[in-house]
Image (cartoon, rainbow, N blue to C red; front, side, top):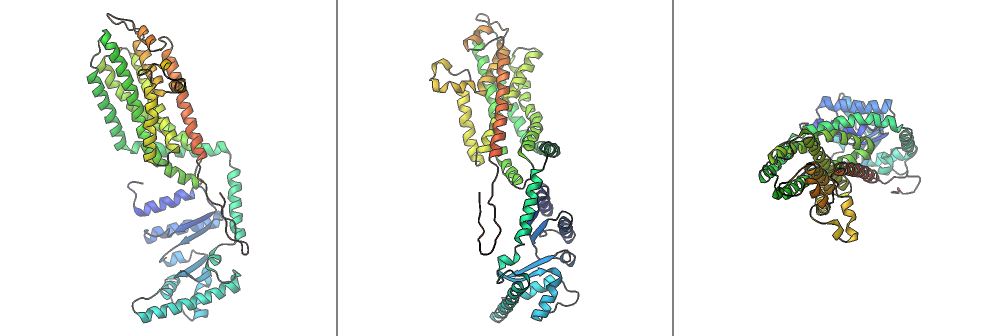
Length: 472
């Protein structure tokens, strides 16, 4: 909504709630902050909903122009918490003229006249007392009118302004049947293009974040490239290569994780509100988000690889570089998916940022470089099997060390064997592991979002003297 004026934001908010085609709409001052022309357009749109879609619209409004007044079917006037009038808009002027002797001047806006009439004039004690007496008299006549004509029983304000129970119940039942009769495939195909378009525009428009991510990846690449500048083929460079590949894996994972933790936790608040309005399903939203963000997210680890690879003089062949870049990108995707899963259950951004690095530290410890898995207690060895750091590190190491010969020293295959990696099939196994991890984390995120669907109290109709009760 950046760049939108106050009026545009108000109309956009109203439009977002109308996407789900609700049967009952409650609006708080929908015309406030709009010019007279736009206010009329909004009320005319609501009027069309009532006429064409049988929608019940209940709204509060202040100082409406005459053209807006003419669009209302019923009106409820309140003053000092008391009911002044409730009934047909056509009978409002006659009620005040015949019952109270207050005639609206010709050509005067009837609602403005009534509001002036029932407002408290606090300029002096005498005028305040006179206004309060008039309000009490109007409230008394309103109570009699509602008791005699509308049979609401005693003029209770809440009962008077509530629509008949059978009318609202019918609307809710109709809405429920409409939701149940939706075809899931058609619903997905209808929602996905719109959600994808919105998600992609959101990613492209966030130029500041994209520039920061690109700068951070390039700076990391320059720092690592300077530290591990033009690695040689002696035994000392073997350890340096392992170190470079390990920090490259960690850098790609942490950059993607922290960005997702900070962004998606905030976005989840908007998604929760829109899902509460039944605007769309969680599956088309999640799939659209993934398809929109993956191409852009792949550019940042790719930029990192394009700088650090030639600076460190890793194996200078196109296939090796493509495998290196593919592994770094997959590692970034897995870390981002992990951030989505954590953000799905985290109550706030602060909580997500506290949880994410703590989990990632465990994966780093069991990343294949710092500890020998065979020496740790059995209760911790399972972490090595699901560590996305280990899988990414394995891909990079197998890609780099396969075919190397250190002089003097062992071959690259022997160095991989010391770490427990298969020189021939290690890269494929690592990419397969990353793919499985990515798919699992996506499914886990989808499950968590689906089961964290917002729930609200369901109000029962007021029958007789029964009280309104809520159910989860």
